[in-house]
Amino acid sequence: MELIREMKPLFAYILPWKRSYASSSIVVSVSSYFENLIMALLLGKVLGAVTNGTYQAAITDMIRYASMYVLLLIIVAVSNAVANRDAERATKSMRLKAFSGILTSKLSAIASKHAGDTLVRLDGDVNAASEVFKKTIQNASGLLFTLIASIVTVFSVSWLSGIILTLLGLLMLWINVKFIAPARVRHSIARAQVSKSVMGLSDLLTNAEMLRFYGGKSVMLDQYEHVCRELQSKKVAAVRLTALQNTLGQVQASFVVCFSIGIGFILWRNEVITIEQIPILMNMGSMLVNPLAGIGFMMANMQSSLTSGVRVLELMDLQQEEGVTTDEQTVPLEPSNAIVCRQLSFGYKDRKVLDNVSFALPAGKMLAIVGESGSGKSTLLKLLLGLYEYEGSLSLLGKEISDTPLANLRDKTAYVPQDCPLFEGTIFDNIALGRQDASEEDVYLAASRAGVSEFAEHFQDGFQTWVGESGVKLSGGQRQKISIARALLKEAPILLFDEITSSIDAISEQYIQDTIERIKGHQTIVVVAHRLATIKEADCILVMDKGALVEMGTHEELLDKDGYYARLKRLQDLVIEGMVG
Ligand SMILES: Nc1ncnc2c1ncn2[C@@H]1O[C@H](COP(=O)(O)OP(=O)(O)OP(=O)(O)O)[C@@H](O)[C@H]1O
Picture 1 (spheres, rainbow, N blue to C red):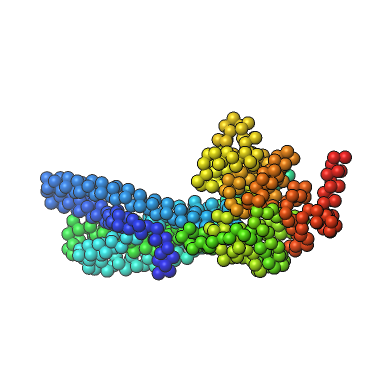
Picture 2 (cartoon, rainbow, N blue to C red):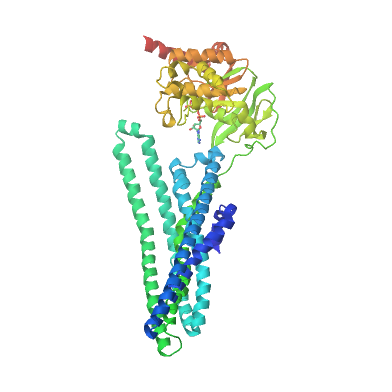
């Protein structure tokens, strides 16, 4: 019962093709009964012919049975193809559901998962779980049919042999059921260890360059070796149990054949059955005992699929973002007040990162946020993007962010994060991602405004240059410019830039400053910056320190104040002078 309850969510994926899948699965599963029956009848005819000397009749029967057997094989082959096609369709739906679950999950939920573990669940676990459609359901329906048909056949031959063989089957079922719980535990441990090994591998690949540089190769190798050793031992433990069970299954099957022949022989000697019925008793005896034994065997084998199924379902159950679907009621956003923040506080788990921050920014103005590392600048941008829940009030274009559907918020904002993520594809594709309905001209214009054209045009393939995985084939500054172009292309009323010029040379930086200057007045801009020289023209500068807003004003006002900002500015000037000097 527990097993059926656990499998229920997985069954949902085969439901759209239930008719063709169920009918073809039943044909496949019952075929083994008929294959055995035809063989048993054939053998019985041969034995009868040998005993009675009726060779001519036996040959005719053999041809008839052989033809039936070939026809059965063709039907099974076609049904198998249909059942497997439906099983693959269900697997694809399951994979897509898990993938879209990740895409729409809360970022905090996905951030708590390691990419390696997610990959294993999406690939290996989906494949292992799909065995439920490929084998388990067919096996289960086959076992049930074979069991009923065999009971009827064996009892019709001799009720005494029926009772003996049924009792033997029940004994074997009891033995095989013992394997279920340990199989579950071992498969679950082994799958978790597979995740750990891929997590190690993904860390190794992501940090390959840095590890070589710092000589951390051997440390990582040791760690990875340890993970692989653990994986090996956990897998061996799971496989050892399966091997033991398989061997036991083979011994049981052979024993049942010998046992049935023995009973058949005794019954024939006592003239309870004819000699032609001995093969029927032998084959059908196996078909009666083995399904009973096989129920326990199948349930133990299913544990691997179920363990993976649970891991896939966990992925699908990640906490989802709300308000991201287009059919949700959208809240009209007013462009009058771009951002208003009142007594805003926020913390990741228990650690407070923003404390009682208040400010307001009219539409079309530029706001800069400065402060030491870890003072909460990027976090403030993330709250403006609706990524986390907060205390106090934070409104964007006149609407409280926590009450605004995410789809609406995302429509109105363009964001360039610090790490400027790019996707495997061309430079053009990476910019075009900013707006689905953008024309080629729009893309080239955004590229030119962000300074992408100046380097892309020097590449052999121009804008069709492949950027590599995460943009590895580009410099940090080039990646930043492409990310800026993508944000500009979106033409959102509010632009959120997090340290967008940190890797850009002075000339390009000035170029982007000029672009921002031109945008000002049309779009509201929020920039997080470390280099104060880049934000002199901001309409308002927020100075953050340990999550608190310590100063606010224009560049000149803050210098006149001679406080935190002015000290920061003098310090930066000294550093620059020192470098120049
Ligand atoms: N996802 C997260 N989970 C937990 N803590 C976080 C998370 N992101 C940031 N923090 C913590 O919140 C604090 C503020 O981080 P934030 O990234 O906002 O700082 P910042 O001012 O932008 O720093 P920097 O200038 O270095 O980018 C830091 O102490 C950081 O460790």
